[in-house]
Image (tube, rainbow, N blue to C red; front, side, top):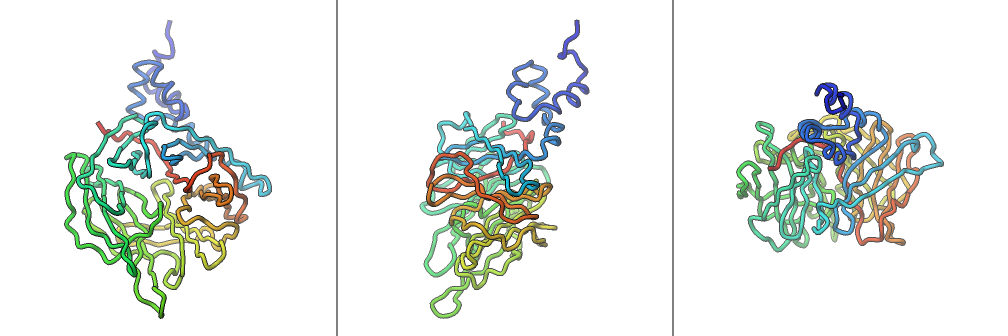
Length: 376
């Protein structure tokens, strides 16, 4: 007697495994050796994902632990006065004993920043790779993950900087880790005149390249410095920085601002901007074209009132199809994590507690799309 295990492979992959939700991957792999093997050759849940158009999945840092988080945004855009997004979060067991300060997503891989080393993890395949730093640096560092478009070889960019009074953060060196050679090397480039802001969301990986929210501080009117904010792209194929790219905001004469970056389906870059001088209003723009040497923008939300973000807050994601943005922050009174829901049709809708315990800093959200990139 034939069973489901005897079905032709084409039928099994296109009609069954394609409809299984991604969060059922463990059950699929434990069903049989054949299913386990197939699940590592294809991304399951493609059809199920299309049906769950209101579901957004990603990873957050909670109490120095990596947690998987799912948001159900169904109905928010339609019912303005009844905003109840369903969210759930579950700590990732494979990283239970590791303190993680930041998670960076690129091409289905997560770069997890631990205290003294780095962990690269493919959640879909369950593969990990530990990476030791080439040098230890007493200062601040920024890390980005990308890949060479010629051969899809993944790389990590690390640069170290120190804050200096009166000028931008001074970058003192660059290093690159190459996955194929399993080694670090010093990147021979002239330290730039620009620096980066002290923000948890100052860089993203998009189409294999890394984009940074950079700033250059120069002397302005008496007793006041003028800061110019812009984008800079690092091309992992050529291993060099591109020219300054304009942001869709004028930041030159602002006393205090928040600039936060996010990706939209690894196709577009979104930027959130808030001036402290404009009393809680925020703007969100999205790219219509972007590359290492050029960028163009369109406005998605302008002058949205309702909340003031923490200096280290502002992690966000965009749901273009449903015309929504979700911005993460920390409620300064309750110390509970908060998600601010914004719709392009209505503006600010509501701030909701996402049921995460009190903390000292806002959640850092990173969207996720599974991949078959091998780490071993």
